[in-house]
Length: 272
Ligand code: GLN
Image (cartoon, rainbow, N blue to C red; front, side):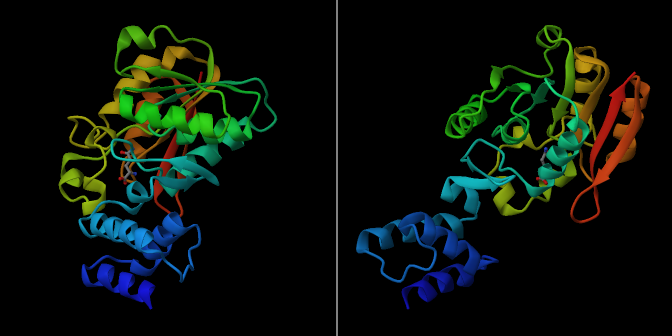
């Protein structure tokens, strides 16, 4: 069987989950993950995708899309692939929004737009703005917003730009999944993650990867209303540091939420 041959090619190259990857690739090319009739042209397309996978490229870039919060999102080189961990951040914000309406939300370091889009989908009456410094990432975010017919105001800007931050006021929520990996973690990345943009991963020069939390918290806290929420995705060792940072910046009711692997993944606080 042809499919078994394809799977063996991936297995021989040491690709874990070869069976799953192959089903996704076959579905992408033929429209059917169990297809047994494959044309010569489709076979060539599949072989080209297998070659990319063997070189360590993430499956998500090869497919050109991935699912986040039940939504199809387009991804590719230059944009961070949405992770299931980030769904915890979306859940947390949605929970906080229960019973409230007409909220203004700002998503900093939006990347593919995954957080902003999921929030807008489930809270249609909110006004959402989203910021990213990468033009490539923003082009994916805009394409994703168009595909899902969701209205988001996108800004191409650096979230560390004090002047830019100073133009934003009266937000009920700021949400962000900023880059937060340490230099050490960057050295130990899986080969797939090395294909993703370092700018979306490396948490600045601080040894503990917390540079963006420090800068964002101080530069953007005045954009949040009193009683408003600041919600961060964090690296699993950063909860204490980020909680202390929020406390020192006049946030209270600080909470840490864990991910599917019971690791600290989200920190939130309300502005007093
Ligand atoms: N969670 C991502 C990873 O593990 C990191 C994302 C980020 O830095 N915001 O690779």
